Length: 515
Image (cartoon, rainbow, N blue to C red):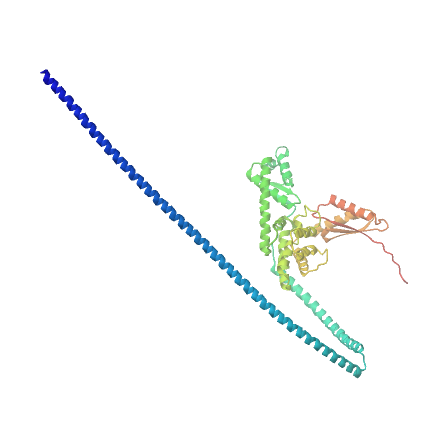
């Protein structure tokens, strides 16, 4: 029993050993097979990689060769083009040289012909001089007069005939010209006035702002007058708050500042918040609004008159004229009317219409800044036109439109006439005769209040006063002093735009009679 057990155990052990050996051999075979297949796969991948690398190398070489070929073709093409261009230029140069040579040859032939003709002309001159001398000798022999005596007799006879006929002709022409000129001038002026009409806005030195109620006056004044002081300081305009119901009066000479103050006050009333900071903000907004309106008014004036190419600053100054009045007549509307009138009259006379219109539109441009600048509006206007490169015709027309100097162009005469027509139109200027006379009388009263003044005359609508002094009381040294004192007195007692010219005249006459 034990032996069989042992044999069985031994048999099992031998089976296990043989199984392990077989398993090991099989595993080894499988491993070697796997290793062999991996090596083959690796060789295959390596071969594929080498083949791909070789293919890419060939592709890169081919691409490089193609690029080189393309560059070479481009260079060859450019070279051929440049060679063709050079050949073309060479042909042109050769053609020009041939042309020049032909021209030089032609000029040389012409020069030879001219020399031959000059020789022939000289020969003919000599022959003519000989014939003329022979004829003169024959005439002197036949008439018994020298050439100078015959010439004087002939000229005298012709002069007498021409003088008589020209005198008759001149008289007839003068008579016809006077008749025709007067008739044509009346027709042109009447036609221009008939074809030109404009509306005017009446303005003064005050503006009235309506209030919703009288309580608003107290809010405008503010605590201890802070609001009204702020508004007056920022705008430069006086606010008059009196017993007038539901109204505030704005008083000031500068119409633009007055307009700014009016717009700012109306905005403050609508807003309801009235205090110094808000006043400053509203005044700034009103200034921008007025500036925009000034520019628009200037552009509209140029469009209406057909005057283009003005300097932007001149357009702004034209817009400022919208807020400027002269004897109640709106200056911008007046300038537009003068432009139309001058243009119409220029068209009838065959003069440059655009120049006449341009000069008419700018003739009062000095009034836009005469509140801020010393001098008459005429001189200010001339300086502005020179500054912004206007033509001499326009500058001259502006300079003479009040008759200060003699006009040298037809345009200047037309502008002066159009200005007078526009100002003299009934209803154009609403200032009463009484007010006008009072202002002139006040000027004369100031001048005549000085010792030694005999008489004074206010002329040019109060822009100039001429003073005649007693030569026995006022000598040449004292005359400038009197002119200075009178001008200072006028500055202190009168308000006026621009300037007033003071002229002191001292004259000494010696008179005797032959009996």
